[in-house]
Length: 386
Image 1 (cartoon, rainbow, N blue to C red):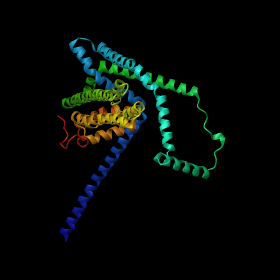
Image 2: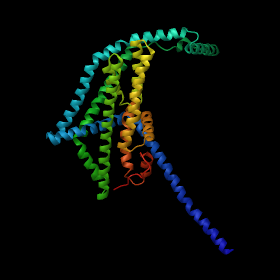
Image 3: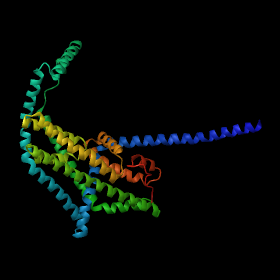
Image 4: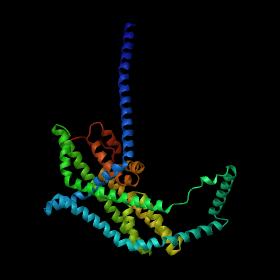
């Protein structure tokens, strides 16, 4: 009996000794969740500040190889090379816009005709009593009449005011000036990052720790981030060019007007995952119907754009991103959804590079290997610190 009592008391002591450990784990997890929520809230609230900074960092990563090549081969200082690189980028964008302005203006001139033709098509379809649109319209009108008879009439004082042209002009002017100011800020910050990128990295290495192992780990993380983001940007540029060329060629074979403009638009909008390609598919199908007056040819044009965007955007880009950044396709898609909710269109452009930087850190920092394994492209153990 004493032995049994002693064993039971020992067992109670073991259980009691495990309770504080479990409590500490729960508290640590709760603090981690609160920290993550705090970071997400900060990213959401500080979007106007963080988006230009992140864009500038991405732009500096894209232009850094060009600046380094000019310094290494042509003996051009970094300050001059960075200025030349940014000037070349701005000139290239301006030249592209000027070259396509006439075609874009002609395409925009057809929008009123397109609106009228689509309106007549919908009107004729609505007059057909056997069509689904007619039945849906009748049901909606019946529901509206029932709701109107059930609710009291709103007073005339609550009627919305007529649109003010001056307010619209001021709003458009303010938006334009804001866009120009943000562009100037992004270019200026990119320039300073290009001329001081190496010295800034050296400062990070100096403050990363006192031991040689910690400094070496910081260098490995920075080099990994550089390589992954630069490769990802090259993937985006290459696949966008492929989408633009393939879309333009297919539209030219079909006979769609302004095929070159459509190809350039498809290549540029491909940089915005999913949303940009959807926009091109819908618009190209609409303008194809207006030009050919044929639903079959409109379906061919829209289906071709969808096939090219799907083959490259859903097949090639995730596969290449998985190979370069070692991030699995599910994590990539969830990342795009999260950053789209967080920052909108800029989040779609910047979400994957940010996730690659986080992945490079998680692979080498103790305690974050499980997150790297969760985001990783395969089931192998995440890379540990050297």
